Amino acid sequence: MAEGLANIDGIIIDPAAVQTNIVVFQLARLDPGEFVDQLAADGIKAVPFGGQRVRMVTHWGIERQDIRTTLDIVHRILG
Image 1 (cartoon, rainbow, N blue to C red):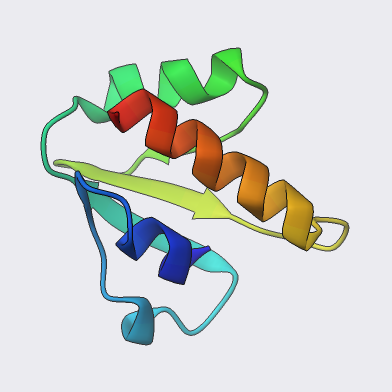
Image 2: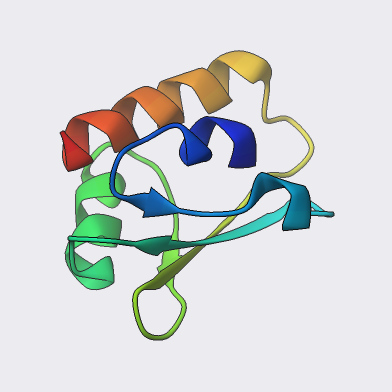
């Protein structure tokens, strides 16, 4: 997830710093609350995490295709 987010314009993240299934990143342009609401409209859960940060967590049952779909939706939102 972190590596894919790092390739999306408008996301600030250092994938090497992500060591667990918890991914925290910054938004360069969009309000985190608005971003999270748009994700929720597509069935993706995330939470604003202070300032421009957003927190997403993967867990058991999340497959590679789920990650790809999420990255596609994030790209579309920030497009």
